Length: 394
Length: 192
Image (cartoon, rainbow over all chains, first blue to last red; front, top):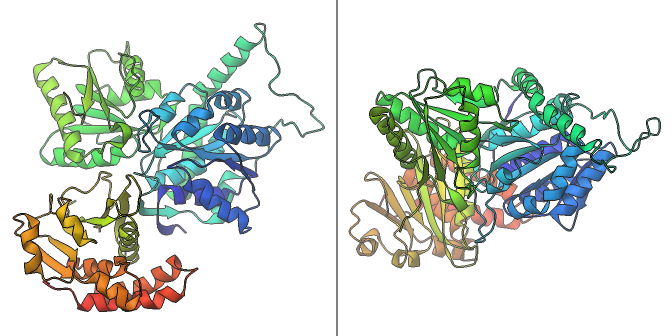
């Protein structure tokens, strides 16, 4: 039986953690992710979980402790945001290259500076090439659902990679909204027990982790890691199918909203996708063939699947809540356009950087993007590829 | 989408406007609605102007922006009328609810030509009488429910007992006091 609830994203994810009952949670507080370990530490202190809760002295140590615990055969989790994720940087790569299926809630907050506690995706986008699977969540329900699925994906024998469940700081992390929780025992059954094929405490299969790997071997291990990431799509969909059987909630690599006959579409990540869906409905009422693609799995990037979703559109706007400051476009834009190159040529694709540092995005803002797209369809020309939405100029 | 009822709360840090928005979300949730309750986080210091928001609907709520065209505005601190544009975007058939001992007619000149409905409630006075502390959020919440009609008085009262028991699990002595304040506030809204 689903449990009807109203919770913030942080509450929902801390409850998912409680239901999973991992061996170790190691975390250091940082806004807006602080509540996740805060709530969880209550569960640990009250004996509601068996977890060893480790209040470490930094995020670097949080990830290091998770790596140690997971290498020893345990199931480890953490949560962080912004500078905290940045401080984990070198350990993110250690976790993924050691093939340790750690699960992390990444509550998206901009990176300093100027210092700002609000949402954008610059933190997790910066970590997009760290070898972690990245899953993005529109609201509290998805943050909860994806966190539970993340454990299964990470520990899948064909994967064995760490996974981050990313959702918008404050907008999702602190907003109380409706969701359905799964019964405790159903969650436990769904994630199952973690039985790693290899770990440091297994005296029958002695091994070492993280030894020196010089030019003779390093390249091959990286190649295997990259190949595993690419192939993880199968496991991600397999877990989603099982999750749908349990809850009725369907997840894919991305969500297609009114894409069937869409002439114009936006590609977008996280909470603004919800706002944009309302905009699509308003446009549809006026007969505008607008659609939306919401990215769920950003790493691995669903290259061919995205192309086939967008291939019938005439104009597409890719929305980035992070600026790569590279003169070429935001991270989602560059991935979408490189996926389309040679596979779906001729479709006009433009980029909008939006919502940096928590700048609010209204339905009207999204309307202006669709208006621009309709203008592109009408005139057949793109005035500017690289655009900013909702920024004050001059 | 037109069935969504939107609230914007104006208060000062420490007055409980955020808590009130979460409690309103709770109460509406318990009557079977879809809800959102969230504050606008800024420099969080005592006394600084803050805003908080609610959406209440019979259908799933997907929009994740702040509220710009509220049906109802709740002003928890009267002094904000001098420094915040509290009527910005308020819908023509909506209402503004101000915490003040004054009457709606006395408040209107402070609202820069606003012609819509004004309700007032002496929430701080009620809080001091009932709770013995000048924390006006629960009587303001009661006034917001009364004016908006998002649920019946009886539903609200019975639900609040449950919510406050949960919220003040470590301070049970304040539950009855808050319930007194809520019941009084429901009967003392001016301008209905």
